[in-house]
Length: 54
Image (cartoon, rainbow, N blue to C red):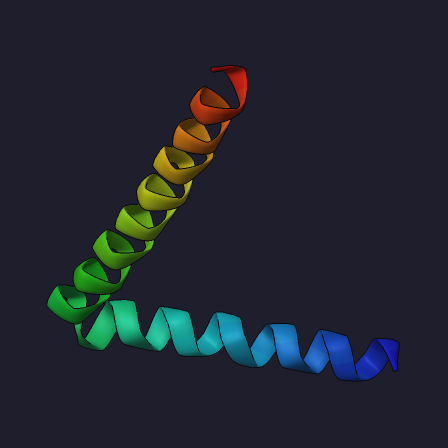
């Protein structure tokens, strides 16, 4: 099972590097979408905490 996890991790790393090298614009779009998702999640948690305090 540990070997499968290592292989899967290597495949993901190779895919990410391939995408960054060959399609930098698309890679930048993926990063932007990821940061927007994290930002939205943090805002949602902040809104929830604000409502719980009130």
